Length: 370
Image (cartoon, rainbow, N blue to C red):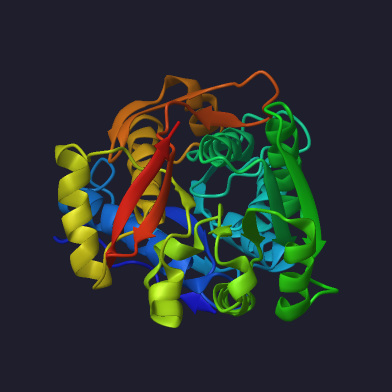
């Protein structure tokens, strides 16, 4: 599915638009709820750039392509958007999709600012064409492991449908837990149904179960089974990748969806810009905006600043990541190289472990910060 371009800025102009390509999961098997929040943030920022005069008087236009969590579809979209003359690429939520898109953008010499995917190895080789807003997975998941140990969970299980992203997260958790005296066991959900998983958890005596399952329906089924099994009454269920933040999770599970900690990339309190953008996103979405929506807004904020400075010159944009220093919704946005990183990485992004409050499921509790 191709989404129509965003509305151009108000007022007449004879100048051609400056185009940004956006990769967003908007249909199954993609996590479409996250995609909707990401797109809302991207579009809000584009609208505000237009209202403020565009890019040196030229309209800013967003060309949206639905990746549906399919790496091959994303690569085809990158090729198409490059041919349409976009100055840069933005977006994507799924790490395996972002990785494919980043490799293609690197090969084509097309700047790509990844909005929300966290896989450490976003590219196989160092590149100046790709930058990323969220912290790398190893950082966030180490924070999550610290939370588990701090809560007294020395034996953790993961229920996983293996892929590159989940395998990377499992490795981070295992190494970080082991360094603190904890252990981790894996259960492959390709061979276990929820009932047999419950039996395995009882036998293993794990006190925490983490859902490393991309399909929301499957994750919901596991939560229901564990919550209804009296033998597992004391087991903590966690979902590091963030499913419980979205309204669809709460609607599907009700009270069973509370007290399931997940990672969120927001500060303890938003500043004036974040509060204003949050209110606008809330109105646009009709619900509380997730951190993914803020990531979308910040993506366009960064790219608009680079476009104002360098126009649509792709090479000059890619050369300018280390010079970025702008106010984002969650703090200053700056990029640097990490010791083992292959892309330009935004630094200083806040990391929280959060869950839905059992006493008020629409309210989030901050359980740990890192």
